[in-house]
Length: 464
Image 1 (cartoon, rainbow, N blue to C red):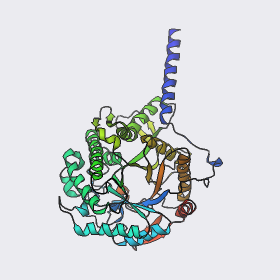
Image 2 (cartoon, rainbow, N blue to C red):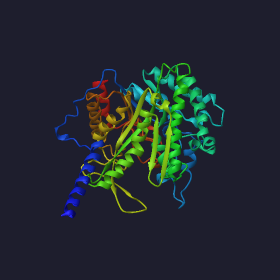
Image 3 (tube, helix red, strand yellow):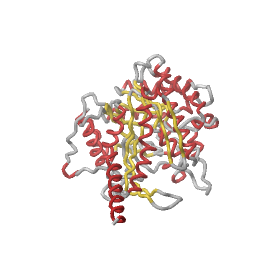
C-alpha cells in the first residue's frame, strides 16, 4: 500500500511540475483555417521598413574578423563558410546604395535599418577614415532625400582586426575602444539619424563565436561565452549613457536589439524535455530581458558556465527595444554525453531553407515576452530564407497577422523591418540563403523583386 501511495504522489508531483513549466511560456498553435490574414490592424504612424547589415551587402570589407574567418579552414581542412564562399563584392551596396534606396522607396517603405562597418571607419586603432565617414554621411543624406527614416546599428557581428588582436569583447577594458567608435559616429550623424541600435543579438554573437565555434574566433568555451555576453551587456549600458550625454543625445532614441528563438519541448509531457527548454530559454532569452528589468544578469549552465553581472543603470538604458524574430526550436533530450539535445521540426509546420520552420505564433509569443520590459518595440528583423520563393508570401501574411494580433491585444509595437531588402552573405551559410525581397544576381548585380515579396508591398499600401 505504501508503494502505491508513493507512486501516486510521485505521479502527482510529476504532473504538477509539467503543468507549472508549461505555464511559463507554452507552445501555441492557431487554427489557420479559421483565420483571415487580411484582417490586419496597425497604428496610423506605424513605421514600415527593411534592414541590412554592412558586411553582408557592401563589399570591400577586408579588414575585419569575418574576412579573416571566411578564408580559414577548420581542423579537418574544410572551409568555415558553406561552399567555401567569401563575401567579396557582396551586393556592391557600397557603390549602389542610391539605386537600392530607390528600391526601398518603390516598395512604399518609410524606414531603413543599416549598420556602419567599424573596420572601414577605424581601420587602425584611433585612426578614423574621413572618406569613409563622408561616404556614410552621403548614404544618410540619400535616405533622407528619398523620404525614408534611417536607423543605424553600431555593432552587427563585425569588428576590425586590430580589435580582435586586442581580445575584442573577451576583455572588459576593450569596451573603451568600442565606446570611442560609437561616440565618434554619433557626433557625425546624430543630427540626422533619429534611431540608433547599439548591439545586434548579444546572445547570438556570444554563442556562435565562443560556444559552438561556428563564428570567429571559433572558441568552444562556455565560460568565455558568458564573459563575452556580460561585456557586451556592459558595453550597451556604457554606450547608451555616453551617447545620451552628447549633443542630440536627448533628441534621439537608442536601444538594444534582442533576438528571441523559443525552445519548446518535442514531448510536452516529458519532464526532462521541459527542464532542458526552461534552461535554454533562460540562457538565450530570459537572462538578458531580466538584466534590463532588474539590473542583474546571470548565465548559468550546470558544469559549463556560471557568470553574473550587476549594473543598476541597465534598468533605464533603453529608449526602445529591438526584436529580431524568425522561429522556434523544438528540443528532444537524449542520453548522449556528447550531445544531450536533438533539435526537431514539427510535422505540422512548414520548413524554411534554414534549420527551422514557419511559426508565426512564436512571433506573437516573442512580442508578449519582450513587452514585459515596458518599452516601445521595433521589430528590427523578421524574414524568411526561401530560394524557391514559394513560401515567402505565406510567411509574410501569417507573421504580419501575428504582429497585428499582438498590437490589438496591447503590445506597443511602433515599427517593423523586414529582413532583408536584398539577398546577401548570410554569415556561415554564405550565399546559400535567399532572404531578399529582391533577388540578386551576384555576377551582374541585377535586382529583381520576388513575386512572394509583392504581398509586403500590398500590405504596406493598405496600412502605410
